[in-house]
Image (cartoon, rainbow, N blue to C red):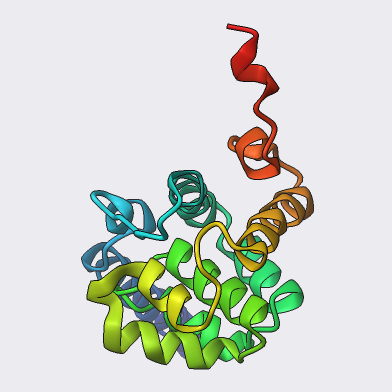
Length: 178
């Protein structure tokens, strides 16, 4: 093999090995992180509303499969800084449901998402219901009902049905049929 050809071959081999090492390293890093679905196992947001809790669990599943669409939704429609949402998505202490609820709760309360994120990091043991109460968006209030209605828009943006939509809308006529 001529010298120039041998050098190109060695260079290509070195690049291939470097790519292989980087890919293997990235896979090992990703495997060591909990997945969105595994973070949601046993997860209880404690919003004080079972329908909202169930919807946030569904959001966890959706975001695990479509993280970019989830992040875009929270950034675009819920006034959250992309850098904050991206950082929280990579933080094993946060689920997408928590991220979503922090930002929609903040928006409903007229506060920046970062403020509710900081509050949750400090008081998460109390659950979201206590934090919502602290910003005057109590379960059952008009503000909380407006927050719930926002789920409908998010699901429409994602192009998927909202499994809890009748309960979110307050439609109870389906129960009377059975």
